[in-house]
Length: 216
Image (cartoon, rainbow, N blue to C red; front, side, top):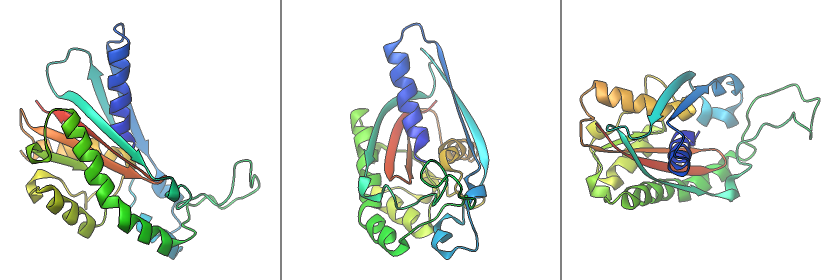
């Protein structure tokens, strides 16, 4: 779910390390919505999951949409906050393959403490490593989340509503969210040549990530 900024970082690092590499194709496809039991109230924060796919092509020496720096942080205390209760080698005969949240209250309390600060941390680190500041951000391509958390994060970053796209008509499509937000931002005229765009994501594990782009 935090994969798009991480994938861009890995692809950029590969192109930097291997001069013979000319292109990297990043593809994301999500069907996590199939793993949700809508009769399980503990899984209600995942009820907004959607399905979809996206693709990005990175090209060495390309003069447009430059991939800049990235930042990633993980909180291991949330490593078992969202689980698949059975399957694998531990419970190989388990037949109910749905995601579950063993302690929803504890996860919510912990995320309330760390999620927004960690989003701000990785976004700040990505833009500062790219030679900019939070005040320079022109557009934010953000993971879909509840509206109150989205609005609070934009407010802390000093961003207007037309500097990010809220994916309320699409839902949370995991690693597709950022590519979709970029496309929608460009279509709406909110993303312009020369803009500093930041892709920011978070996912169960729990990991937060961000990658900066110079658009156009």
